[in-house]
Length: 285
Image 1 (tube, one colour):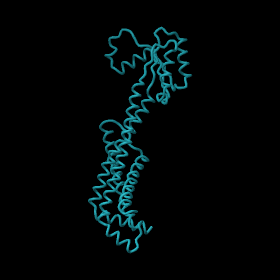
Image 2 (spheres, rainbow, N blue to C red):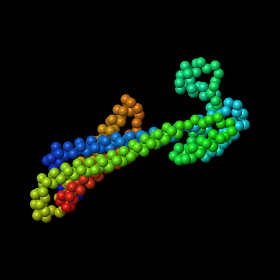
Image 3 (cartoon, rainbow, N blue to C red):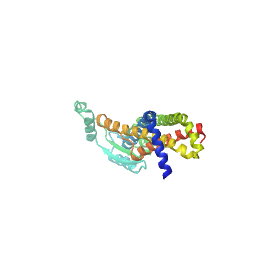
Image 4 (cartoon, rainbow, N blue to C red):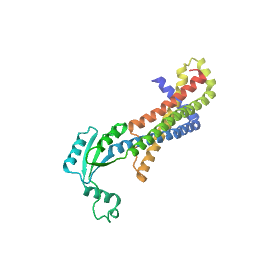
C-alpha cells in the first residue's frame, strides 16, 4: 500500500510540474476518443434500426378479387402453420381503404366511387428469415398458393440497411484501430519527452538502490490517467450531445452503462500501453 501511495504521489507531482503538457495530452486523447465514441453510437443505432425494421417488417399477401372463402381459409391455415410466420392478420377491403386514407390523406380516396383495394393477409416473420436464402424461398412458396394475387414486401430496404450497417461497422473497426494507435502514440510521445528530461534523475535513483518498478510506475500511472480522463471527458460530451440531439432532432440510443465503462477503461488501457511501450523503448524496462 505504501508503494502504491508513493507511486501515485510521484505521478501527481510530475503532473503538476508539467500540467500544461499533461492537459494537452488529455485534450488530444479526448478528441480521438470523441471520434471513436461517435462511431460507436452510430454503429449501435444502425444495428438497433436494422433489428427494429426486421421485427416490424411484414409481408402483404394480396388475394384475388374472386377468391372464395375456402381458398381464403386454406391460405390462412398455410400461413399459421408456417414455421417462419409469427403473426397473421386479415385485412379486409374496408380496413385497407382506411389505412390508405390515414397514410395519404382524404384527398387520395376522395374521387373513388368504389373500393378497388384487395383483401390481404399481413404476415409478420421471424427476424432471422431475412438473414438467409429462406426469405426468397418463403415468398415463392406463398406466391404459389391458390388464391394469392401478389405479395408485397421490402427485402431491398432491409438489404440496403444491412449493407449500410456492414459499411459503418467496418469503418468503426478501422477508426477504432487508428484511435488506439494514435492514442498510444500520443501518450508514448508525452512520456518520452518526460523521460528525456528526467533521465539523469533516473540514473541517480538507480545508484541509491531504487528498483525499476519504483522508477517507472508513476509514468505508467500518468499514461493510464491520461487515457482515462480523455475517454471519460469524451463520454460526458457525447452524452450531453446525445441528449441535445434527442431533444432537438430525433431520439437516438446512447451507450449503456457497461458499454460506457468499457469505453473509459479501454482509454485507460491504451494510455497504459502507450506509456509501457515508451518506457520499454527508451529505458529498457
